[in-house]
Amino acid sequence: MSRTRVVRPGPVPLTGRAWSGHGPVVRVEVSEDGGAAWTDAETERNPAHPWAWSAWRATWNATPGLRHLTVRATDAEGNVQPLTAPWNRGGFANNLVQRVEVLCVPGTRPPAAGDASTVPAAGA
Image 1 (tube, rainbow, N blue to C red):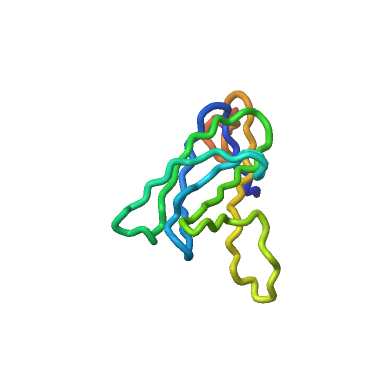
Image 2: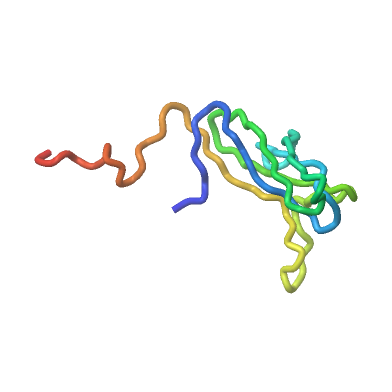
């Protein structure tokens, strides 16, 4: 079992939600290289509830290879999610950026285990 996601090349929709305890979220960024370069995501803020979770979305153009998608939020006070957290005994303040490993493979995806196309026909 693996947490790595597998996609085909081309546009891949990304969505999520962001929140800060210090101020309204004003920016969300996505990186495909673990945080070396960032691209702005589109955020949906509700002016009636500025402290609520903010939805975000972006389209990632997947190219073959292993990628480390990383997402971070910035709030109105200028707080940016850190790439690493300072150690503390209780494990509190775990506010790291979110990372997802994605493998982009060319061609079609192999059938999933148990898919009807992988089960031999009767009498085969």
